[in-house]
Structures are given as structure tokens and as C-alpha cells.
Length: 271
Image (tube, rainbow, N blue to C red):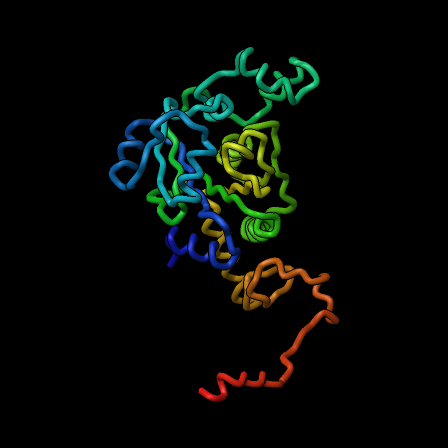
């Protein structure tokens, strides 16, 4: 019997020692889908326009489901990523600081992943464990070793090798989610300058995106590894902590119990 999204989340949090909940991201194409979602989910809405990264803070750190629309989004990069705004001169100029000139900025902007214009009416983000429909994308904020584990299990589960992540100037969280949704492949990228600050990624978290249709097989592969090795770690099979990488498993760096019991202190002996 397939695992529930809550069971997947619990397993991922426990075995990979994730700091935050995986985020179930959904793109809604019409209002009928939005209304159907509202009947199933307990959700909150942004009071004022904020960034997509900040919507996700509520999901991954507070465990809340957020349902939001174009009017709730205060980030022009995300507006472009979600097809809620076309690329114009003003938007190109906001990217000029990353580029040699405006012509390059425009080329870079137009090569970024984007949903078709006006193709969606709303977006939801939620802890994976609270997902009420299949996510379009599952977005992880994690460290280097956690992202490596996810990539290894994803590649084994989908028979994909090597992975070729997509990195853009800006739009890491929003554009990264869109890329994975459109291409139906895992993506991994660093935070952009915007999401570093507004998205609270000051600890250097990496973004990992897995298509919602692939999260089940990825988690199943993780379970297979646990059954085969006794733990989720790849770098040190059998060790319950992922990433136990003491000098590449050097057989000389080992410890054993002394076999000697500690002496009781005087006060304990009197007791």
C-alpha cells in the first residue's frame, strides 16, 4: 500500500534529519480547481503582498497551508515565473546588475523558465504532510548532504544519470519550481540574492525540487536503502546519521567501549 503524504514527510524528516518540512507546491489552472482545493484544505492567505519565498516560510517553518493569487504576490520575478506578468523594460532593468549590459539581461530573462502567460489563477504551498492533492512540485530547503541523498535516491528511482540542474540569475525558488513542473525532472540550485534574504535562507540552504509524481518513487527508494543497509546514510552505510563521512570510512578511525564501568561518586554510594 502506498505511503500517505504524511508518512512520506515523517520518513524524510526522520531519516534525512531535515530542518524544515518539505513543501507541496500546486499551480491551479482555473477557479474550479481552486474551489475544490478550498473544500479539502485548511489554509491561510497573505494579508499583504509578499514574496513567494515568504509564502513558503509559512509552509516549511510554521506548518501552514498558504493559498495565494497574483494580488498576494509582491515580487516581480515571481510574477514573471508564474506567467502573471510579461517581460518588459522595467523588469529587464531590475536584472541589469547581474549582467554585462541590457541586451544580455534581456536574453537571460527570456531564457528563464516561465509558465505561459495567464495560465494559472492561484498557487498553494503546504507542508507535504498536509497535502490534500498530488503536489505539482515538492520543494526542499536542505543542506549539502541532504540534497545529495535526495539526488541519489531520485536518480535510482527514476533511472536518471547524471542529473543536470538548472541555475538562473534570480528566481531560484519560484523559477526553480516552475522548471521542475515544466520539465518533470529534479532540480537543485542555490538561493538567489532575493530568496537569501526574504526567504530566510541565511544558513546557506540549497533548493531541491522534485516533481510531485516522482516523490513517491523517491521515498520508496529511500526505504529500500534503509532495508538494505540498516540506515539511510550513503557515505557510511549502516550508520543512522546521514552523511557520517569520517575520512571516507577509514577503518583506522574507530572507537569501542572501554569495558570499564565508571566508579560511583561518594554521595551516590552513600545513597
